[in-house]
Image 1: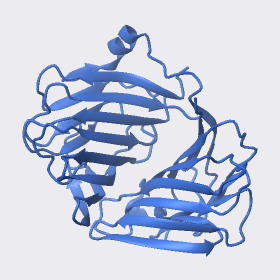
Image 2 (image 1 turned 135 degrees about the horizontal axis):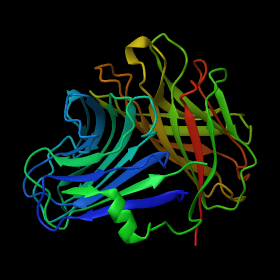
Image 3 (image 1 turned 90 degrees about the vertical axis):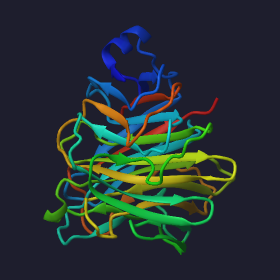
Image 4 (image 1 turned 120 degrees about the vertical axis):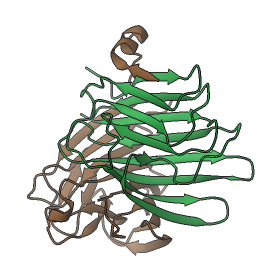
Length: 165
Length: 194
């Protein structure tokens, strides 16, 4: 019997990597939450993919603020759900990212809420978004993928399961 | 880096969360015949409540409706809300005051064939809900997406106010268009303080 809010697995990168994967995810929970804290080797966007699907089955809408202005963007027919539409610049300051994936074992398309937060003491941005994976398959694998370049050594990712009554 | 879960779970002994800090109180699914979901007899034993919902309406005209919330069955113009919204083209803000419910805008896609299987989602946090000396404030993040350029599919950051010092023991969630589909789910969680 899973706990209501349970850490399923954590990865800390021992060397720079272009992706972090959680595989063989059981269907024991209601929702999944992915929490990432890390830095890039060079500019990149964080993409979330499911079940190793890198086809153009993803779309999303975001709302972001860069310290000067607020904006909203959308993408359709893309290869992942973006946590950050704006490039995550090289910095010693880590970004804190969350993905909430709802009804991941259900039979409808999968929707996720995303947050991206990075402050570089004068620059940086905050972003919130909603993303879609157009598949009715149960999710058994989650990949956090760098759109380019890599995540630095020390980047951490934790997968949680949330179980409803 | 590929990270298979099974050996990690085994090596970490399961690493369960602290017992009772975040508890599931109740969950309910849509029936296809009602646009109202109610959590009743909510105990006052938590510090905060969280609602996580996946929503869709049976209506078929191609609309995206709002989520509406009331507490303790009370209307009476005691509610207000603020919203910061991104529709894929523009960021905008709006507010309501002295209304009969809290509105979380543009979150419930209907069952139009052009967005079959598309669900809206929301996380709603309600802090200090059992206070008998303070009014009640919530925050939420919500939205839906249908792989379309329609600005009806949005991401929303919302706050809501209920001007009542009564402890919340009932939460009613409803759609104004029609009825929740059977694929809609609503889960209520309680979060305890130390």
